[in-house]
Amino acid sequence: KVKAFIFDLDGVIVDTAKYHYLAWKKIANQLDIDFTHEHNELLKGVSRVRSLDIILELGKIEASQQDKNNWLIQKNEDYLSYLVDMDESEILPGVMPVLKYLKANHQKIALGSASKNARPILEKTGILDYFDAIVDGNDVSNAKPDPEVFIRAAQLLGASNEDSIVFEDSVAGVQAANIAHMKSIGIGEKSVLHEANHIFHDFTSIETSFIDQLINN
Ligand code: G6P
Ligand code: MG
Image (cartoon, rainbow, N blue to C red; front, side):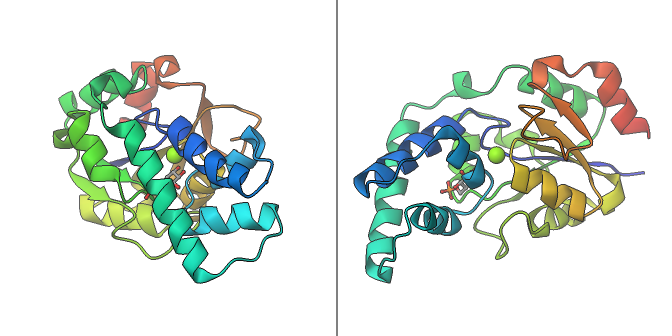
């Protein structure tokens, strides 16, 4: 039976969630909106357009399309400036051993990310070759919690939804996996990701016996 191991990118494979946060915070502060880490949880896994709308809703601000476009450009430029020197050191602890273990066991791996910057990040960190399929923000029209991105990834790998396993750090992503009847593995805080089927603080706490179970069940 083919299993699909689907990884979110930001906050799961690489520590870019902090850069998204910094870039959004700058925009929010410009608009006199108080932007906390709790607010930021609402943006994780969410497309950039939707993220900006959420921030404007927080500040009860109505803006023209022109202003919104400018802020979106500014946010992405600022975000990309944090990625200029990116290399494999930005890969989160424990991720490489899991990717390598899956490869050694002939498992299929996909990326399922809302980001339009996904490919350059995989290239910069040198792990593009680990992925049998990549579905990112350029490929899908419905943002998480809509499961489109994960369903596409499973299809590309030839696995059923039930045989797909999703690694996610965002509430929206965990919900997307659950809606698609995929196995959701939350990476992060239990209090935030309680809807996930399994929760780990990070990849270093995932044992190979657990991966074996995922492969064989
Ligand atoms: C991921 C991140 C979000 C980000 C979204 C779009 O899901 O968790 O914080 O807004 O991707 O990313 P992009 O790189 O296209 O702005
Ligand atoms: Mg994420």
